[in-house]
Length: 371
Image (cartoon, rainbow, N blue to C red; front, side, top):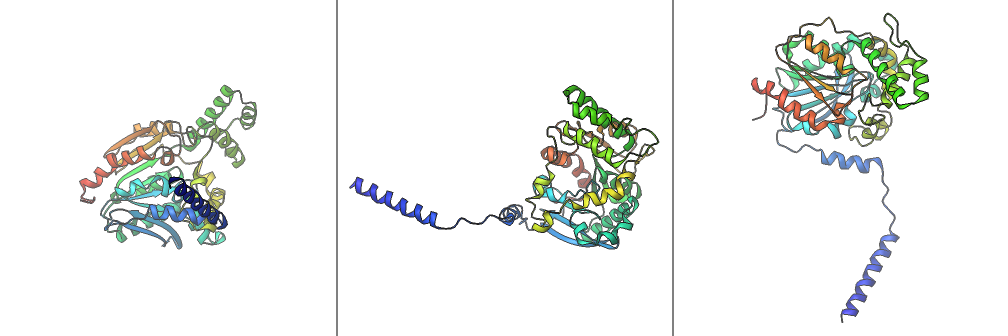
């Protein structure tokens, strides 16, 4: 009887297996995976907010993602770098935890991400000036304060976005719980010189003849009083990134990989998500490399600086030297020992812990947190 039962079981398994083989395998598409990510990060809490929309800012429609488990929490506006390199494509991966303690706003700036794809690049070209981005940020924060019913917000500026964020903090300190600088730009020419020295030294220690030859071909790099050509910047970044200047223990960035699974971008958009990067840099990279905040001695709102110990893209030691000199009602400097320039992706856990422990109490003191 046992033998007969086993035989029937084997036959049944064979029939099921044969039937399964007869059925066509499901077609896997990008949406197969992004739908999973979308559902996993779907905010279901009663006080939650989950919005992806275009808002009229600075005369054009610009895309925002607004997400948080409780709209009574403080607003954290993340101002991305690049120029033209949005953080929204990585939000599903690296800022999900922040949404439990903040209402997190990712903004695709003019010339970047979904905003770039939404507008005619030719019509926007004349507005691609650094001051216009600061005006946009001011207009956006004003809109957020009204729309989300907040007296103050946090602004976190990263890399290029740290120029926008710091200028906004100087203009409207009364609007901010604190300004948070990550990969803070302070003295771009000096940062470039130190980044180049790092890359050349690393190349020599590694015995990489190609790197040495290419880097020496652009010497003297970032010489005082001289404009750095884009081709020279690209070559310096090629080797600085390779030796860990952008991500501490990787030879390149992972942002493009993360964007493949972002549910915030349709399939057609995901393939072009960083298309605005080159467009924006054509207008803004030269002004970026002339930025110098060494003259800024006083800030009228609290200041938090987050720095990757290995950051050579925007040199963290230059930022630390400035931080030691600047005065603010309250200030804090936090080193991220296992990060270079991409703290948000390299140490998202420590970023969450730091902002919860160092930034959120400032909002709590003003009664701007969920019970």
